[in-house]
Image (cartoon, helix red, strand yellow):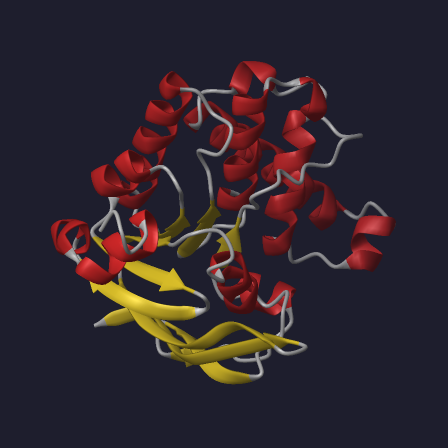
Length: 254
């Protein structure tokens, strides 16, 4: 049974059809990659799924529930979390505080108890801190908890952003180019990290340009070109697909 269903998703910007009738599904506990050349509509598709863009038409279902046009915080509470192609950390906060912000989506005390520092709010804040620290330890950056987030090396910032996304307790994690800007060693670390996330029962949808990473970790791949889906299947099928080869290599080379 499909865990994530994207049905006939469309979004235009002026006369440009950035996402044009895209449909696909992701089964529970799978890793599915979205690939395609620059301008294919991959990040726009992620923005539509995560709720930061409204679709012109289409539908997104998570575990059978329609989340069409819900605001991003409601979508997050329904179990979808994401990272960004361009890292978006809170520069004035520590590593631990960045993860705690992600964790607050699961808080229950509300604004007034937190403002008044009531016992329930204090307990919850302590739990948030402890759980956030556990996530940092899991991602092997616990020793950096008190560092300023922006003082970290680029690769560690990538890991921190993934840690913050995990703090929301997602059932579906959207990773937008997690290996962008990383060296070979860091890319191998991210590869292991993604498979480890799946082993914790979290479904993963990932945009990535590093084809060796995609082919290593993906159960299935969907390929976009000019906003349209041109192929979908397991990695070995995608590698042999003539249309995909033409898109990546050009007509003459193909």
